Every structure is written in structure tokens, then in C-alpha cells.
Image (cartoon, rainbow, N blue to C red; front, side, top):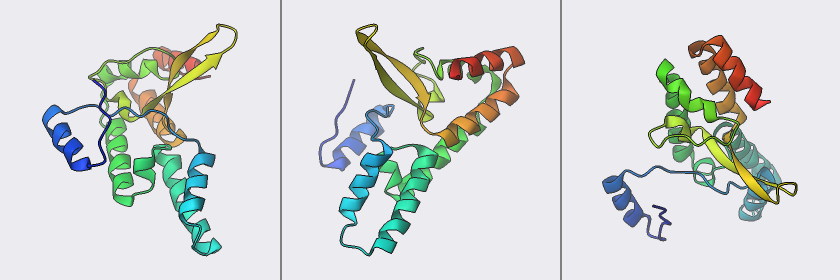
Length: 167
């Protein structure tokens, strides 16, 4: 089921508490879009203050990806990065199977914790007159953290195979 929230977030929060849905990130803006939003919002502030704020937002975006609800609000950012780090750090060997979908079009199971660390990107190709989707890390920071953890938990051959799909 896909739920698009109403402007009244309290209604969604009540529904979410009752139904425990998974949040899937879709249609993330790119860096230039985020920068344009910030420039417009901060247009009345001095350039130095605008630049400082952009560095802060850019730093958050580098860590958790371009998820608007998490890069503009400090508390939301802190909660998201903590949850992502916990997801990586608490992974146990049997769960490494979920990460084999990283970097390819394999779908992952609904019980997987992988959704905290990945985004689905649609690739359009003229050759096949259509497109396909890839599961990619939401940010380089979380990708590096995840790969370091997987290097410790996976068999060497399995890890090498995973890295080959990333290239």
C-alpha cells in the first residue's frame, strides 16, 4: 500500500503508529536542486550566512543522502544518521544476504533492514527501449560504512563478488 500524507502530519503519524509501515525513499532531488531550494529560502540573509548554512546542509546530505525531510531539520538528521549507523553496526552474518542486492536490480525482502541504506534508481536506456532499476547506496558515507562491515562478516569470495557488482 502506498500512502501519500495529507498536510496534517498528525493524521499520518497516528496511522503509522497503528500500521508500522516501511518508509521507502523515492525521487530524491540532486545536489543542484537542493542548493536552489536553499538559495531561494535564504535569499534575504547575508551571503556569508547563506554559505555557512549550505555547508551544514551539504554535510548532512553527504551522510544521509538527499532526503529533504532529514537534511533540513537537525533533529530529524540526527535520528536518521543514528538509525542508519545502528543498522550497519548491528548487522549479523546471516543478514549479509540482504546486501547482495546492493548495486544491482535484485529486489530485497520486506523484512530487510537494507531499506535504511539504499535508494532505488531508475535507469533509462535507449538500447532496450525502456529502463530498469538499481538498488544503490543512499550516500557514499553509508556505502563505505556498509562495505567495511560486510568485509568483516562475509566470506572473502562472497564479498569479492559483491564488490564486482558495484564496479
